[in-house]
Length: 299
Image (cartoon, rainbow, N blue to C red):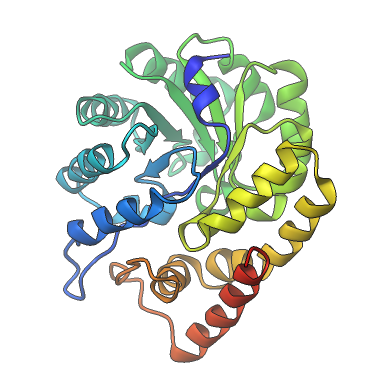
């Protein structure tokens, strides 16, 4: 197992990008979040993920955020989402992220031309990136956004590349997890679905990159700790208690919901970038109740 994977055993929040009302990146707010997260036993940070609204950022903003994450992360690893639609563009952004201090690159499947992206095309894409990247690469499958799930045989084939050290899988497909780890156990598996976090840990996942951890890092870390020490009754209880909040900040209300929950929890969610819009006051009240329930599990 790659040494970096030993440091990624736990909960990794996919950091949001706080924006001001005018749409500008609020870098001081981003830095304040990192300072606040230092008190939680998190395993690292992901910057430029789906919940960081990476698709709405320009390259200069992305590099600035990686630099800020590196400054504020202390000795915790920083993963950077560098996947773009072209192989060439992904390699260039990965190199820039490495120069800015990222410890590893999280590379999402390209998907715009998904009908032409069969297994051989995906393998060529990821192998070229892994060959050129100065930092380790983790694969990223998020079919809810891309409409393209990374096939298990492709993940298994890429696991043989010395610079591909893991993957993040966000659909919660336990069959995929078991097929991949059954053949390539050396690959670090990061669960990207809070709803599947506990069962994924039981099946061999090394950790989780969970949106809900941005608003409730303590309960997500407590869940991981309980599962790791074999306290399965406690882990199952925490999983159930976490679910209303986890569902609210992902499938129900997305990034605007996550940012509102962070504001309610004392972090800086900030505004989403247009065309996304802030949630309503009614949704905020729903989030407030879900957040209180999650907090009650560890008070």
